[in-house]
Amino acid sequence: MDTTTNDTGRHRTTEAGARGSSTGGPGGRTWRDRAWWNRPRSVVVGAVLTGAVIFGFGTLAGVDPQVRAGSGTLEVTIPLVIGTSLAAALGGWGVRSLLLRRPGGGRTAWLVLSGAVLLVSLLGPLGAANAGATVLLLLEHLAVGGVIMLGLSGAGPRGARAA
Image (cartoon, rainbow, N blue to C red):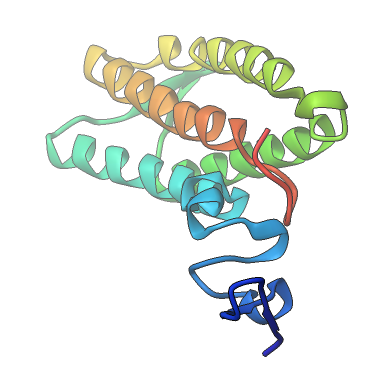
């Protein structure tokens, strides 16, 4: 651990010795600057868990989530919910990482783009087989999309402040 002496004669820890501590880190940032909801991996996990929990509560409430697909119906299952939530979150993470290369981090572009994608995704639940499934799937799309959109809006590259 590196220490230096300041003008008052007191010792303090330099950045190199403070890495990983809760009091400081690279660039003098504190643990508050690295909030868990601004970490893309946490957003991906949060989106998947949100979709699974809402689906679980909906099916426990007796909703039979089916959507019309072609000439038949498609049963919405938990693996389908998890896979779709995971794909949406990973895709969002990829797009957000590209937008972070823009000057200013591209936060506005991210919010507009992800909001548009969320609105388009709401067309899917409108093809549900019954009213209960429509409500469940709309809630699921809004919740998972909201987690991704808002969670990644402040996500920055490792070691940088949130945009």
